[in-house]
Length: 268
Image 1: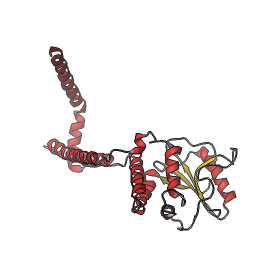
Image 2: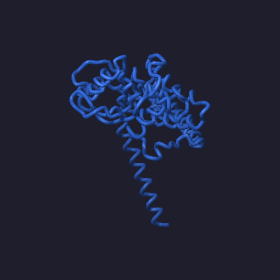
Image 3: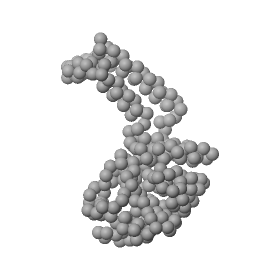
Image 4: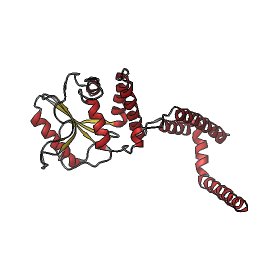
């Protein structure tokens, strides 16, 4: 009976998830322009470019520094810590690369006084002394203050080689939590700009897919929680005990039906 009860609960979750998927399909929610044009994991061409454009007060979104202020607030910085954006914002070249200086900064928002320097990592590996070089650039160019951000999908720590065995302040941010939360606020900010809002929603949904926080993943998490409930633990143990035989039985049925289908096709 325990197994029947567990399977009944799982079936309910499955039916609800399928119904939700069908509704989302009807609404076109699975269409994503960034996936369609093949930019899903493009660190520079999509992710750095899109974030930089939102953070830029002169960006084409036409919402001045509202996105930037929201980002600063999330970092617990004053809303006017950076008020403008000077020079190249994305892929700024800061000189020939040496052990302690130079390279290209993924995203930099600065007004001549303060700066937000963002090292953006989707899947690329850390480079030797990378964060050390950017930190040295910040100290040299912005004596009034700067914030160095290490942005990754899950908020992991940088490789030691990127730090150059030095210790300096770093803001660790993740797409999974920080960027998704910020984009949620950006969607509200862009209420009066429906086209910009729609694009931000598309990008937010893409980030959720990349970080496994979309609705399909939530369904899996709910399913897992159901399976490990105290009342269901014994039933799961019983299912796992016969897992090999159960899988073998299913494969036998599959092959049997497949052979029967092939014979039918031959007769036809």
